Image 1 (cartoon, one colour):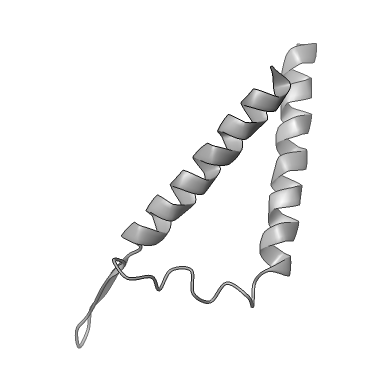
Image 2 (cartoon, helix red, strand yellow; image 1 turned 180 degrees about the vertical axis):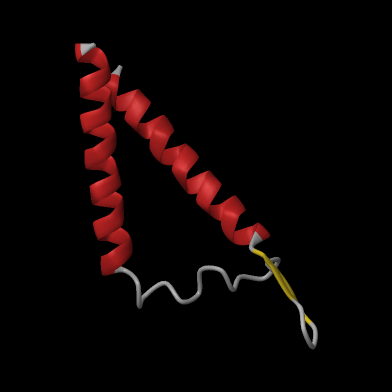
Amino acid sequence: MQHLGKILIITGIILVITGVIIWALAGRTGWFGHLPGDIRIRREHFAFYFPLTSMLLLSAVLSFIIWLIQKILR
């Protein structure tokens, strides 16, 4: 049960840090979500948005960060 408590505390700290970073960068990341390759379809009574390129970029960055953390901790 102690192990679960530690995991929950670490997860909470990571979420708080992520929230602070997103809040601090809110006005500076206007380009994110509007990259070439992001799919936007607008009609008269319909709008569809699929940020394909943005999510691929985010996935690559997060994968690198996780890889780096694992490398440091070993």
